[in-house]
Length: 290
Length: 114
Image (cartoon, rainbow over the protein chains, first blue to last red):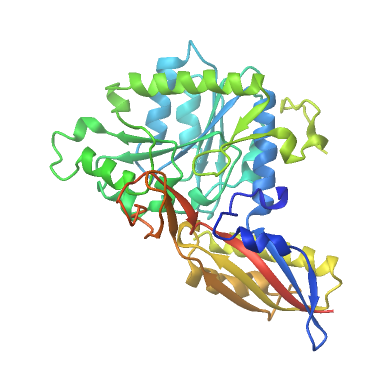
């Protein structure tokens, strides 16, 4: 089951698993094979490999997703300013073009690597892995991966992160969770950003946004904040501090965590047959990968 | 938008399986895709011939079976149908449900000439 990561096999379709891989001859010389493999198996393997590296170095990896302009980079800037002395942070930025976001992060004194995807609408686990080889993650507590601004595609690709955060700015519609259920179902935390604008916007109701989120069977916390003005960011910072503590506890127990909505939230590494990667990877610049 | 990337991943898997089974040509491919997988079936169907061109799967027919969305209520235990943005229990209306099916994106079957 490691080949499929099990994440798409549910009670509803598990009966199909029982006849996996059996070759059956049909009458006319054709052969048929029952497979039952997640289409993104290759990506999921790479993601598990990335997560293994993060866990080895006790790094909490967080994937930030939202539409373009919801304030992902501004959130990171405010977070670095608030926690910079307390926690060591690094950032991977994903955009179609430009180094602008990575530059903004570096201006705050934090290492940042920009992935420019060209025309690709999402980051995948391979892109993140390549980026890791150009970063020195020694001593890093939190790695933020700022995904391409897009409420559709990034939700489908595991990058190796432990947590997904979806941002919804109050200048967007409060029905975004109903319109983009796949994205919002993937969130471990939803942040309503630019909350200082709520006073001048009469068409966004945080209660309605939360109601639409609950209709997706999501029980995750919803926090409001205005990062650029440092309003209400304390709950967000506490959430982060707690996640860092939880990650350290998991690492001690040799446990790991995949982001929301996976049937097995916590799986042992030994279940993931990554024995061939038990050597220490530091991903420093001098490191070469064979 | 990411359906081409998904089809390319599909073709990689199909090529591996065709090689393992010494297939000369792939005739047909079956997928199960749920609405909560994040992949749109019509877009997969459009992207598929592009990804398959020049591979052992070129010309193979693609059959995609849409999967229903079903949830199981954590409160009353009843399993019911639901829609993509209302994953509520059909019996008691609670939102504390778990998805039983609907987020699949699975290669289920391949038919080929050997």
